[in-house]
Image 1 (tube, one colour):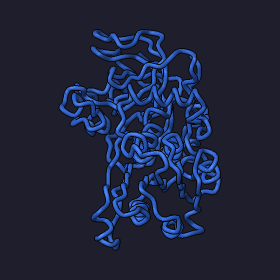
Image 2 (tube, rainbow, N blue to C red):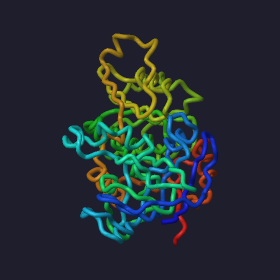
Image 3 (cartoon, rainbow, N blue to C red):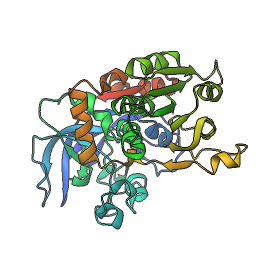
Image 4 (spheres, helix red, strand yellow):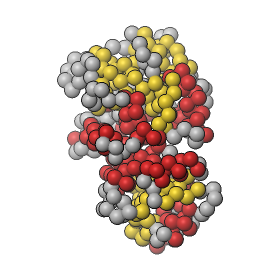
Length: 361
C-alpha cells in the first residue's frame, strides 16, 4: 500500500515527508494507522549518525495508533483496537523466555539493524528498500509491526499523550521503579531533566522517595521538575552539582539521563558509599574518582527501563489516569509536517518531549 513517511536519505539530512510503499502484514504482524509518535533523542542520534544505522530510513519508535489489519496467527489484537508501539524483541531467546525482553539476545539487530526478523523491511521507495527502526518506523501514516511490539490500551484514551510511553517515559520511570526499586524515604538524584529524567522524577515521587534532586542546564526544566516532585533543583551552569548534593549528604541512587559520560562521572561522585548509578546512554567516565568509593558502587546500564512493555506501560497509564504520573506536562504537540522544527526544539531544550500528531485520514 502507498503511505507517507518521513524519510532520512543521508546523515544530517532533514526529514522529508514522501510517498513510500508499505508491504502488507505477514504472520504475527499487524498494520497500524499511526495517530501520534513521540520524538526521542535516539531518533535524532540516528539521524545524525551518532549511532550507526543504514540509510535511507524511516525512523520513529514511540508510535501510537489504531489497528487496521492483522496477519495470520494474530490473536492479541483486532482491527479497531488502539495500541502503543514499543521496542522489538524475539520472544524466543532465554532472556525473553525468562521475562527479560529488554535483554533479548537479538535486541540490537531487531531495533538498530534496519531489518525485521525475516531480514526484510516492509518499506520501499522507487524500488529501493528503506531501513526500518525499532521494528516499527512510526514517523509515518502507517506501520507494520510484530505483535511483540504492541501494547493494547483501552478505547477512548488520548493516544497523543500516551505515545511517549513506548520508549523515553518507560525508560526513565522504569529506571527508578524496576531497577532501583527504592524504599520509601530513599534519596535519588536525576542528572538531566529531559523526558527520561523527568519521568524518573515522577517515578521517584510515586515510590515515596524523601529526597529527589534534579539537575539540568535549563531553568524551565528545573522549575517543572519541582512541580513534578523534585525536592531540590540545581542549575548545572550556576552551581557545582556534586558539591550541592554532597552538602545534602549524598544520595543512595543516581540516574544519568543527559546522555553525557562526564555527567555520569558527576552522578557517581555524588553517590553515598554503596550507592547505585544507572545510566541510559553513554557509559559514565569514572577516571579521577577515588577507587575506594567507586569500588563500592553498583553501576547499571538500563535498556528501556528494564521494562516488559505489556506489563509496565498499563501500570503507567493507570497512574497517569489517577493523576499520579502527570505525563502531559512534559509534552508539546506538533503537526507531523513540522517534524524538523520538533527536532530543532528538542535539541535546543525548548521542548522536553515533542509529539508529532498525524493528520486524520
